[in-house]
Length: 482
Length: 95
Image 1: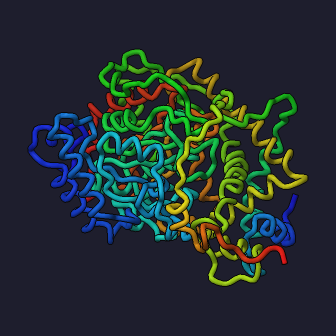
Image 2: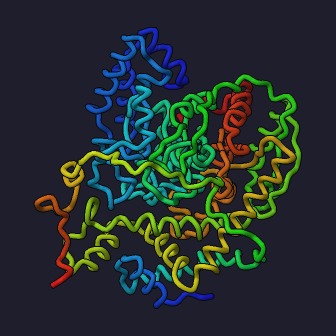
């Protein structure tokens, strides 16, 4: 049952072969057994999860079940969840029991899904290895000496270790796709504006987007059907007709033009990753797709641009954490300013403080034009690169990450090296395009490799089609760590 | 451009984050590395390019000026560090 797809689990529930309460208890048992080893979850509430499961069983009995009714889903701890501790991986919110539900959580509740627990993550989603979490690093289930990637490392680990059938993540610069790649699962960041940011604790608002993480493209499509949709409480939420993201899964790939950016297959990529990615592209050719070389000439500027814009937005978003209305307040201080300064110094970890300092600096008087405006101009060039590439191809493919999972501690003292590990994913957020990662093999030390699939705006159904067709003829996505 | 220790302390103060001497020295080294990376941006001539602030070219939506939220003061204040008589308490600002 651990390897069952979401629709298989849904069928079991519909046919009353298992109740949601039993299914939830089964997965919780596995979570309790494995979590001490992997640290994928920050908060578990057997009581709350089982109450949701029993409510789902009533819905199933009444014949009103939807596709995910009664299915346990792990929720990244960045989503405010009413009555649940919502920490965002930070000491700052270590005591924050959310008084409301995020838009994404509301949608899962309305679908009758069961929240199986809140997953570990880099603090405020700032990190690529899950090592910045106040609650300790998550381990990669394929090799516990390796990082799971980040920031949605807990969600990636939970799905990879089959502690949950699927999970949510958020992606500001690769935080769904990179951990999906490093843990050997599938993950998708939608077009900016498709999923609600309401109640999703903000990091960089013009880049943040919620998306699903699961075992297969087919499961991602079902998750996306629940997660997407207009939310008037998010000012950048897009008003569009609802889509069924499963609609194109079965289409043949004959004639699909895959763009291979020449900048993605250069020195930075390690040999093992290049081999696995090239083998997957060969498989796509067998499936009838054509490949064309495209160019994204400003690729190397993505990381510098991102590390101006994301910290700038973060420094503004995180100014709300002042120890007044909620969250951490320092125990001792002399006056109001001292209370702010001490609460923030003690409540935030090193990486978060580093990014707030960068952001404050680039937005400060005298530096705004040279950094912030310059970065916004280059952001346009990066977006234009993609627009031109999509004139020659339907979909873009390359490696998700330049290497397989690195060792815990390997890059934690070198922020620049850590930042460069997101070189391929960041540009997609800057352009606002949809991107996904699917497992396509193993590299060094038998650690997973991910294929990065980037589509044009609103082409999620096509990307899922490409991913699903590959998964029909390969079995990387069914492999699970021993 | 090179960052100084005073810059780090000034910015930390603007961001309302207390920073000790040792921490500021470490931060200076790391931030200098990051700004070295960021510096690559300056090599591109962008005079004719319009800044892109957002991924989607959409206008800010307006909404009707009506009350949509209910009063949840007690619930919200139940998670506050310090409250009294419905007010959030902070150290005295005005003598």
